[in-house]
Image 1 (tube, rainbow, N blue to C red):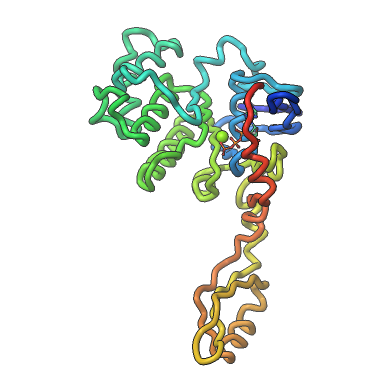
Image 2: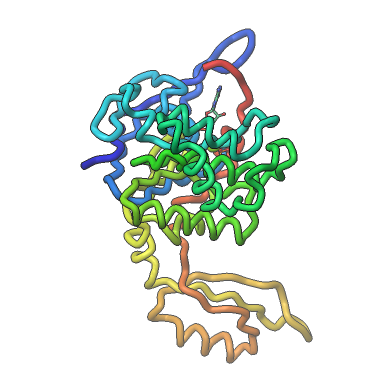
Length: 304
Ligand SMILES: Nc1ncnc2c1ncn2[C@@H]1O[C@H](COP(=O)(O)OP(=O)(O)OP(=O)(O)O)[C@@H](O)[C@H]1O
Ligand SMILES: [Mg+2]
């Protein structure tokens, strides 16, 4: 079954104070996420990741287009209990203890009263918060709040977890823990859609990814489909001799077949080879934002 399907999903925001002009945050998105897969939504700041996620959760409404989740139209009443959601900047009522907050979300998702406490404890333990369960949220660090956010997203054992930047605010060990958690969710049969602007977070665990650029889908498919095409290219980083010493660091990408002859040539010139690596140009090209794109992402405004 298909977990998520988007058809022509489009969202315009109206920005500006005196003269409202539409800004297309998402442009005719076509997307399918299969049940049981880990799907990464990639893109730079302002690419449309959060917009896509908010549309799926009906926190905002599309200008045009439709989507279905777990075979149901958006907003179907049974979906709330079947979806877990981590917002981009979780903000929680911070006089509650971590455990109380997660219990509260369990209640919202329809977990029976008698099971809520045990489920909350289990979810918090899973995100590395076993020791801090009884701590009030206002005393939690940013990384701890992020973990509590993850706990509330999984406490009701959702069929589909939608996580907006789940690794943000976490240190490298924390990021690895979140990756493991996502893999565990898949193992238990759940589908996970998560957004990130960090390629390596997605590369390690995603079955498939979509890359958004300025609201448009630039690529969708398995990462190795993009990565596979790069293998034939190699990046050499080196420093040539200049005057009596070494010159600036230079970088070039060549076909793998040319590697040895190119290295010979550099050696003949007594260049210092800094590194030789498979090029990842295509993937990064797909992913890279042009300066204008970043600027567009910064367009401040309100209204929806
Ligand atoms: N409420 C809003 N009003 C006006 N414009 C908005 C609003 N929300 C988002 N936008 C615009 O829509 C575009 C997409 O934003 P979105 O938040 O979806 O990006 P993102 O990919 O999640 O970025 P980030 O990595 O920074 O979280 C941006 O140009 C943004 O300025
Ligand atoms: Mg976002």
